[in-house]
Image (cartoon, rainbow, N blue to C red; front, side, top):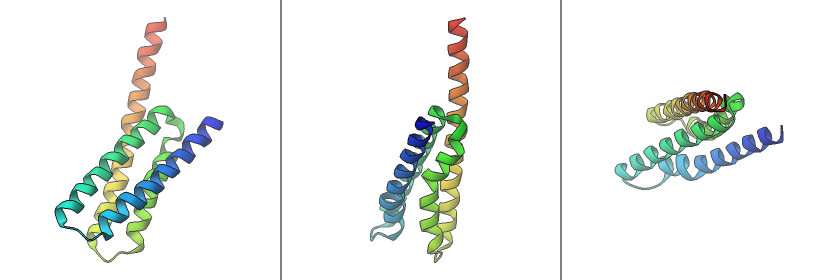
Length: 120
């Protein structure tokens, strides 16, 4: 129970930091389009990796942790809907977190199968 709560809090903190320093800066900072696109790709990769890790560690709360990871970025983008690309970026955050959960759960089940066969 404590592990579940701690992982959810860790996901919430990681999501808040990524939202503030990744999503917010990639959209509202002064910079060229290339810098913004690179930062967007880095944010999406980071969200994918983190949601995969959280889903691998704790598959039964994976969807909640993915919501904590990507929710802040989606909220930031939807609060200022001045650009249609913000909706696309929000959708990409959502898809990347879902893909990470799917991969993390697959890895967890595969590892458990391999681990069960090796102990028998």
